[in-house]
Image (cartoon, rainbow, N blue to C red):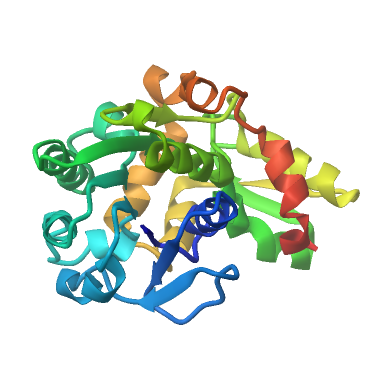
Length: 279
Protein backbone atom coordinates (compact mmCIF):
# COMPACT_ATOMS: atom_id res chain seq x y z
CA UNK A 1 0.00 0.00 0.00
CA UNK A 2 1.22 3.49 -0.92
CA UNK A 3 -0.22 6.55 0.83
CA UNK A 4 -0.41 9.82 -1.11
CA UNK A 5 -1.01 13.02 0.85
CA UNK A 6 -2.31 16.07 -0.95
CA UNK A 7 -3.98 13.56 -3.23
CA UNK A 8 -6.48 15.95 -4.80
CA UNK A 9 -3.95 18.61 -5.82
CA UNK A 10 -1.93 19.32 -8.95
CA UNK A 11 0.73 16.74 -8.00
CA UNK A 12 -1.20 14.29 -5.85
CA UNK A 13 -3.97 13.70 -8.38
CA UNK A 14 -1.73 12.55 -11.27
CA UNK A 15 0.50 10.65 -8.83
CA UNK A 16 -2.46 8.74 -7.41
CA UNK A 17 -3.64 7.93 -10.91
CA UNK A 18 -0.18 6.78 -12.05
CA UNK A 19 0.28 4.48 -9.06
CA UNK A 20 -3.19 2.99 -9.51
CA UNK A 21 -2.53 2.41 -13.21
CA UNK A 22 0.72 0.67 -12.22
CA UNK A 23 -1.39 -1.83 -10.29
CA UNK A 24 -0.46 -0.61 -6.80
CA UNK A 25 -2.82 -0.34 -3.88
CA UNK A 26 -3.17 3.35 -3.07
CA UNK A 27 -4.68 5.33 -0.22
CA UNK A 28 -5.42 8.93 -1.18
CA UNK A 29 -5.39 11.42 1.72
CA UNK A 30 -6.99 14.84 1.62
CA UNK A 31 -8.66 17.18 4.10
CA UNK A 32 -12.01 16.99 2.32
CA UNK A 33 -14.05 14.34 0.56
CA UNK A 34 -13.09 13.99 -3.09
CA UNK A 35 -13.44 11.71 -6.08
CA UNK A 36 -10.51 9.33 -6.60
CA UNK A 37 -9.68 6.82 -9.36
CA UNK A 38 -11.45 3.43 -9.26
CA UNK A 39 -9.86 1.05 -6.78
CA UNK A 40 -8.20 3.82 -4.76
CA UNK A 41 -9.09 4.11 -1.08
CA UNK A 42 -9.79 7.64 0.14
CA UNK A 43 -9.20 8.84 3.70
CA UNK A 44 -10.04 12.29 5.00
CA UNK A 45 -7.31 13.50 7.37
CA UNK A 46 -5.53 16.71 8.36
CA UNK A 47 -1.72 16.60 8.40
CA UNK A 48 -1.75 19.18 11.19
CA UNK A 49 -2.96 16.28 13.40
CA UNK A 50 -0.50 13.46 12.58
CA UNK A 51 -2.20 10.92 14.85
CA UNK A 52 -5.28 11.29 12.67
CA UNK A 53 -3.31 9.66 9.84
CA UNK A 54 -3.46 6.26 11.55
CA UNK A 55 -6.36 4.91 9.42
CA UNK A 56 -4.52 5.92 6.24
CA UNK A 57 -1.14 4.51 7.32
CA UNK A 58 -2.42 1.12 8.45
CA UNK A 59 -0.74 -1.49 6.25
CA UNK A 60 1.19 1.12 4.23
CA UNK A 61 4.75 0.53 3.08
CA UNK A 62 5.41 3.86 1.37
CA UNK A 63 4.32 7.48 1.79
CA UNK A 64 4.38 10.52 -0.46
CA UNK A 65 4.53 13.52 1.85
CA UNK A 66 3.32 16.88 0.57
CA UNK A 67 2.81 19.70 3.05
CA UNK A 68 0.29 22.38 2.16
CA UNK A 69 1.19 26.04 2.51
CA UNK A 70 -1.22 26.56 5.39
CA UNK A 71 0.41 23.74 7.33
CA UNK A 72 3.72 25.59 7.07
CA UNK A 73 2.00 28.58 8.65
CA UNK A 74 0.71 26.67 11.71
CA UNK A 75 2.52 25.45 14.78
CA UNK A 76 2.22 21.85 13.56
CA UNK A 77 5.40 19.79 13.76
CA UNK A 78 5.70 18.09 10.39
CA UNK A 79 8.42 15.77 11.75
CA UNK A 80 5.67 14.07 13.76
CA UNK A 81 4.24 12.80 10.47
CA UNK A 82 7.47 10.92 9.76
CA UNK A 83 7.43 9.48 13.27
CA UNK A 84 3.82 8.42 12.83
CA UNK A 85 4.60 6.78 9.49
CA UNK A 86 7.53 4.82 10.95
CA UNK A 87 5.39 3.71 13.89
CA UNK A 88 2.87 2.21 11.45
CA UNK A 89 5.48 0.26 9.51
CA UNK A 90 6.04 2.60 6.57
CA UNK A 91 9.46 1.83 5.10
CA UNK A 92 9.85 4.52 2.43
CA UNK A 93 9.00 8.22 2.36
CA UNK A 94 9.24 10.49 -0.67
CA UNK A 95 9.18 14.12 0.47
CA UNK A 96 8.14 17.06 -1.67
CA UNK A 97 10.54 19.80 -0.60
CA UNK A 98 11.50 22.93 -2.52
CA UNK A 99 14.47 24.22 -4.48
CA UNK A 100 14.48 27.16 -2.09
CA UNK A 101 16.16 25.11 0.65
CA UNK A 102 19.29 25.40 -1.51
CA UNK A 103 18.85 28.72 -3.29
CA UNK A 104 17.30 30.79 -0.46
CA UNK A 105 17.88 28.82 2.73
CA UNK A 106 17.29 31.63 5.23
CA UNK A 107 13.51 32.01 4.84
CA UNK A 108 11.47 30.61 7.76
CA UNK A 109 9.48 28.13 5.69
CA UNK A 110 12.65 26.88 3.99
CA UNK A 111 14.46 26.54 7.30
CA UNK A 112 11.55 24.39 8.48
CA UNK A 113 11.61 22.34 5.28
CA UNK A 114 15.35 21.77 5.49
CA UNK A 115 14.88 20.60 9.07
CA UNK A 116 12.23 18.17 7.86
CA UNK A 117 14.61 16.90 5.17
CA UNK A 118 17.21 16.30 7.87
CA UNK A 119 14.69 14.48 10.04
CA UNK A 120 13.79 12.20 7.17
CA UNK A 121 17.42 11.46 6.29
CA UNK A 122 18.14 10.57 9.91
CA UNK A 123 14.95 8.53 10.42
CA UNK A 124 16.32 5.15 9.36
CA UNK A 125 13.65 4.92 6.66
CA UNK A 126 14.27 4.67 2.95
CA UNK A 127 13.82 8.11 1.45
CA UNK A 128 13.97 10.36 -1.57
CA UNK A 129 13.64 14.14 -1.66
CA UNK A 130 12.16 16.18 -4.52
CA UNK A 131 13.07 19.86 -4.81
CA UNK A 132 11.00 21.52 -7.54
CA UNK A 133 11.22 25.15 -8.55
CA UNK A 134 8.20 27.13 -9.77
CA UNK A 135 5.11 25.27 -10.99
CA UNK A 136 3.47 25.70 -14.40
CA UNK A 137 0.12 25.38 -12.63
CA UNK A 138 0.70 28.74 -10.93
CA UNK A 139 -0.55 30.16 -14.22
CA UNK A 140 -4.02 29.18 -13.03
CA UNK A 141 -3.86 32.40 -10.97
CA UNK A 142 -4.51 34.13 -14.30
CA UNK A 143 -7.43 31.97 -15.41
CA UNK A 144 -10.21 34.27 -14.22
CA UNK A 145 -8.72 37.36 -15.86
CA UNK A 146 -8.11 35.48 -19.11
CA UNK A 147 -11.68 34.18 -19.15
CA UNK A 148 -13.19 37.58 -18.33
CA UNK A 149 -10.83 40.03 -20.01
CA UNK A 150 -8.35 38.07 -22.19
CA UNK A 151 -5.50 39.43 -20.09
CA UNK A 152 -2.63 38.01 -18.05
CA UNK A 153 -1.64 40.42 -15.29
CA UNK A 154 1.70 39.65 -13.63
CA UNK A 155 4.86 41.36 -12.38
CA UNK A 156 8.32 41.07 -13.92
CA UNK A 157 7.04 40.27 -17.39
CA UNK A 158 10.42 39.62 -18.96
CA UNK A 159 12.12 37.77 -16.10
CA UNK A 160 11.97 34.00 -16.42
CA UNK A 161 12.61 30.77 -14.53
CA UNK A 162 12.36 27.15 -15.74
CA UNK A 163 8.93 26.30 -14.30
CA UNK A 164 7.94 22.63 -14.14
CA UNK A 165 4.76 20.81 -15.09
CA UNK A 166 3.30 19.24 -11.91
CA UNK A 167 2.62 16.01 -13.79
CA UNK A 168 6.38 15.67 -14.23
CA UNK A 169 6.84 16.05 -10.48
CA UNK A 170 4.22 13.33 -10.04
CA UNK A 171 6.01 11.06 -12.49
CA UNK A 172 9.31 11.49 -10.65
CA UNK A 173 7.56 10.86 -7.33
CA UNK A 174 6.06 7.64 -8.70
CA UNK A 175 9.48 6.47 -9.84
CA UNK A 176 10.95 7.18 -6.41
CA UNK A 177 8.12 5.33 -4.66
CA UNK A 178 8.38 2.28 -6.91
CA UNK A 179 12.06 1.92 -7.82
CA UNK A 180 14.76 1.11 -5.26
CA UNK A 181 17.37 2.81 -7.45
CA UNK A 182 16.11 6.20 -6.30
CA UNK A 183 16.48 5.52 -2.57
CA UNK A 184 18.64 8.26 -1.07
CA UNK A 185 18.21 10.48 -4.12
CA UNK A 186 17.77 14.25 -3.95
CA UNK A 187 16.33 15.60 -7.20
CA UNK A 188 16.07 19.23 -8.30
CA UNK A 189 13.13 19.45 -10.69
CA UNK A 190 12.65 22.10 -13.35
CA UNK A 191 11.11 22.47 -16.75
CA UNK A 192 13.13 22.30 -19.98
CA UNK A 193 13.62 26.04 -20.49
CA UNK A 194 13.50 29.44 -18.87
CA UNK A 195 10.18 31.07 -19.65
CA UNK A 196 8.90 34.54 -18.75
CA UNK A 197 5.33 35.53 -17.79
CA UNK A 198 4.97 37.34 -21.10
CA UNK A 199 5.95 34.16 -22.94
CA UNK A 200 3.52 32.14 -20.82
CA UNK A 201 0.74 34.51 -21.87
CA UNK A 202 1.63 33.85 -25.51
CA UNK A 203 1.52 30.10 -24.91
CA UNK A 204 -1.92 30.39 -23.31
CA UNK A 205 -3.10 32.48 -26.28
CA UNK A 206 -1.79 29.84 -28.66
CA UNK A 207 -3.63 27.10 -26.77
CA UNK A 208 -6.83 29.14 -26.83
CA UNK A 209 -6.47 30.16 -30.45
CA UNK A 210 -7.32 33.75 -29.49
CA UNK A 211 -5.36 36.82 -28.36
CA UNK A 212 -4.33 37.27 -24.74
CA UNK A 213 -2.92 40.62 -23.67
CA UNK A 214 -0.11 40.89 -21.11
CA UNK A 215 -0.37 43.58 -18.44
CA UNK A 216 2.64 44.11 -16.18
CA UNK A 217 1.84 44.66 -12.51
CA UNK A 218 4.01 46.55 -10.10
CA UNK A 219 5.43 44.56 -7.22
CA UNK A 220 3.01 46.23 -4.80
CA UNK A 221 0.03 45.41 -7.01
CA UNK A 222 1.16 41.80 -7.28
CA UNK A 223 1.68 41.48 -3.53
CA UNK A 224 -1.78 42.87 -2.82
CA UNK A 225 -3.31 40.22 -5.08
CA UNK A 226 -1.21 37.37 -3.71
CA UNK A 227 -1.89 38.11 -0.06
CA UNK A 228 -5.55 37.32 -0.62
CA UNK A 229 -4.55 33.65 -0.71
CA UNK A 230 -1.19 33.39 1.09
CA UNK A 231 0.70 34.94 4.01
CA UNK A 232 2.42 38.26 3.21
CA UNK A 233 5.83 36.78 4.05
CA UNK A 234 5.36 33.99 1.51
CA UNK A 235 4.18 36.51 -1.09
CA UNK A 236 7.34 38.57 -0.56
CA UNK A 237 9.51 35.45 -0.83
CA UNK A 238 7.81 34.48 -4.07
CA UNK A 239 8.16 37.95 -5.53
CA UNK A 240 11.84 38.05 -4.60
CA UNK A 241 12.39 34.89 -6.67
CA UNK A 242 10.23 36.03 -9.59
CA UNK A 243 11.83 39.46 -9.74
CA UNK A 244 15.47 38.58 -9.09
CA UNK A 245 16.07 34.87 -9.63
CA UNK A 246 19.57 33.67 -8.84
CA UNK A 247 21.62 31.77 -11.44
CA UNK A 248 20.74 28.58 -9.55
CA UNK A 249 17.04 29.39 -9.82
CA UNK A 250 17.37 29.90 -13.57
CA UNK A 251 19.39 26.72 -14.12
CA UNK A 252 17.68 23.95 -16.08
CA UNK A 253 18.19 20.78 -14.06
CA UNK A 254 18.87 17.42 -15.78
CA UNK A 255 17.13 15.44 -13.02
CA UNK A 256 13.74 14.88 -14.70
CA UNK A 257 15.59 13.47 -17.71
CA UNK A 258 17.76 11.31 -15.42
CA UNK A 259 14.81 9.79 -13.59
CA UNK A 260 12.24 9.48 -16.39
CA UNK A 261 14.57 9.01 -19.36
CA UNK A 262 12.74 11.82 -21.17
CA UNK A 263 12.82 15.58 -21.19
CA UNK A 264 10.47 17.54 -18.93
CA UNK A 265 7.35 18.89 -20.60
CA UNK A 266 7.39 22.53 -21.78
CA UNK A 267 4.90 25.09 -20.51
CA UNK A 268 3.09 25.06 -23.86
CA UNK A 269 2.21 21.41 -23.28
CA UNK A 270 0.78 22.24 -19.85
CA UNK A 271 -1.23 25.13 -21.32
CA UNK A 272 -2.68 22.92 -24.05
CA UNK A 273 -3.76 20.26 -21.56
CA UNK A 274 -5.32 22.82 -19.20
CA UNK A 275 -6.81 25.19 -21.76
CA UNK A 276 -10.36 24.61 -20.49
CA UNK A 277 -9.48 26.56 -17.33
CA UNK A 278 -8.88 29.68 -19.45
CA UNK A 279 -11.96 29.50 -21.69
